[in-house]
Image (cartoon, rainbow, N blue to C red):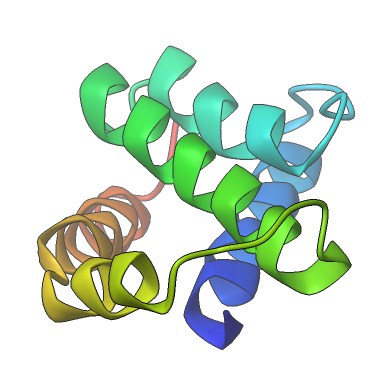
Length: 95
């Protein structure tokens, strides 16, 4: 949860700093990074779904199978790719 929230914070910050306009919501903030070339569009879409999954967990919209949560936590590939992509983009000086 905390990592996804931090990813959203980074996406919101980049959107504001680059003047890309305010995102409609947290999922859009992450997708915007895909639209602007910070993230691969596929990664942006998966991260946006992770944001939605966190919303389900936090707000208890529905019952969640604990095994699904554990499964999601066992694969950090997308989170690592997010960090590499945003870090690389910042290292290049942004847009």
